[in-house]
Image (cartoon, rainbow, N blue to C red; front, side, top):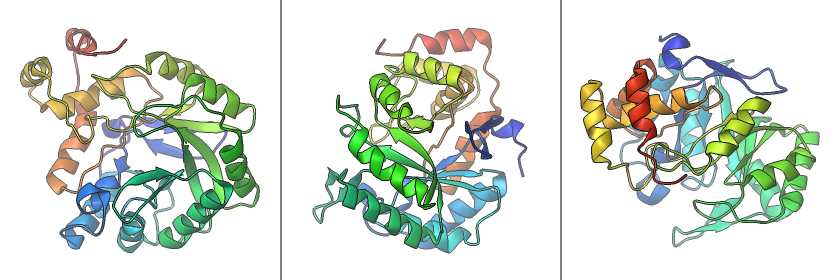
Length: 292
């Protein structure tokens, strides 16, 4: 098993006793195409989860609308009973329609139903952290968080969730949310080429709040940057490994959840935490972003 140092070091979520290695695992890609239905090979999907845990990963990001329901059921089948140090983070605020589309689901009854779906499919009595997913598919929408966040805080009081995070939000929405309840993490789209959250990351770092970038490797459109390819060649690593290593260097409050359904890619992703990037390489990588 790799040490915490080899997995990017550790991070403690504020106001909690939850400590995770900074290199985690995102479970979205355990399903079939378009994040729908079962995977092509169920045994491989379970093997990916088990190897991640054996390697030292103790932070899994999931949602019951992956599949829908499929990902959480695979996690349960592969890992239950769960290791004591495993932190499972789920999210609510969306649902899937039969045509495989994604729609927002922020009404109180939808959030309550989603939490119970997560608990049932993960076989948990309480979820460690639940992220409230707002915004549109990739960016924040200027709207109040009060109504859906109130539903989550009620569920927290009932003991069904332990801690609350936010996803696809703005700094203004974070400020509104922390007046209502403690927020332990923010999950937005961010990577070496998409850096509109630079100021938000720095603000959260001062507060000790985790920032968890989704699509750290570009998501459904993987990063394709010629300069990144050249830098990675010099570093004797893959472009995706360098992109992940850069994120770990970007700020100590960044936690990584790269997702994959492949054992080979899982191993490559985990190895990224051990890549030592020189200051000159970091400087070159810092010039690759397309948004300021």
